[in-house]
Length: 282
Image 1 (cartoon, rainbow, N blue to C red):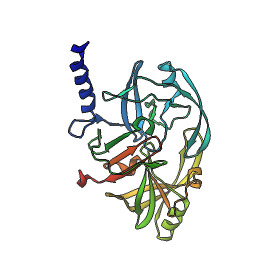
Image 2: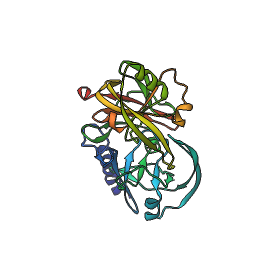
Image 3: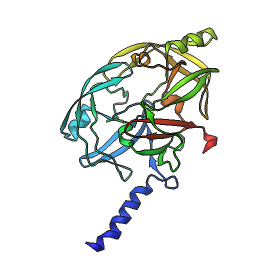
């Protein structure tokens, strides 16, 4: 038994190395609809999951849960951008991300996952990173452990500050959303500044609910140290905005606006936080 100790220590060190800043890190890929995707290994096979900093809990398509033969784990309240409802859960144990064991998860089931390519198995939420601080590099496409967390987790989803065409906004960091969405107040202020309309679109929630949105072209978005020139954002009266008590207009920054940035994320059982850096901060 004593002879096995060095081997166990080496195995633990190798698992940790996958997360450190100096290691190559855990690779990310891009899906056809713009999501940042990680591969999670499970005892029953791999899962391709979109990295979702805007979800408290992970989620799987029903097809993926059935393929892995995951046992039921009761029901849960599912809060999405477009509303709330009840969803079944499944028990996922023994999963690994880049050689590092993930905590036991109870992902909710999605019957209407917004994946135009049909290639995703679901979303990896904040529950997979409890007690961790990570750097999500959306330029180099890798995920590493953050040796010096940039912020202290607070209740709720990761949020920070920024501006849209010099209008100060409250920013929610949501890599699980392919496009970015502003609340009606932001839309009114942009209209007053002569922002160009770019037609209309539809936002589809995880429960299949669709909400009409109008599209606006903006000149510049700043989120912490990350700058984006020329972007098109959606403006919609989402139910999630009704639950926000922010004193400023709200922008939910999705994968399109966050592309090329470094997200420094920290999470615990109570909530999460994030800071966003531009390429020059690497």
